[in-house]
Length: 198
Image (tube, rainbow, N blue to C red; front, side):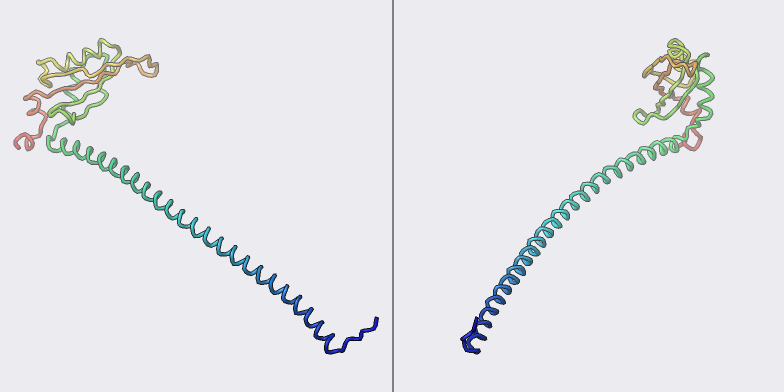
C-alpha cells in the first residue's frame, strides 16, 4: 500500500491518535486515583467512627469498674470498721477473758465443751457463747448451768439455737449457741481495775 499523504499530515494524524490514547490512559489513571481517594476517605471515616465508639465503650467500662471497686472498698472499710469496734469494746471494757473462760468451763456440764466466746455487738454487756454437746439434753443443760445464780457469772442466758447432726467425725453431735448477759458482780470480777473505775 502506497501512502500518498504528505508527511506532515501523516505525522499530525499519528500524533492525534497517540494523544487520544494518552488521554484515555490519563482518564483511567485519574479515575483510579479518585477511587483510591474515596476508599482512603471512607476507611478513615470508618476507623475514626470505630475509634470513637471504642473510646466511649472504654470510658463506660472504666466508670463501671471504678464504681464496682468503690463498692468493694466500702465493704472492706465496713469490715475493718466492725473489727475496730469490737477491738475498741474489748479494750474499753478490758474483760479478762482467760479468767472468764475458766469460770465458764467450771460450770458447763459433763459431755459438753466450750467452742467459742465473743462479745455481742448489739447488746451491751452480753456475750455470744457456742458450745458443743454429746446430745440435745447436754446442750440444754449448758444454758441451765450458766444461768444458775449460784455461779454468779450471768444474770440471764438465752438459747439462740441447738442443732444436732449425724456427724460421724466428732462425738459432739450438737452445737448450741447462747446469748448470756453479765450480772453486776461479774462485771466487777472480770473487768480490770482501771476500766472498772472509769
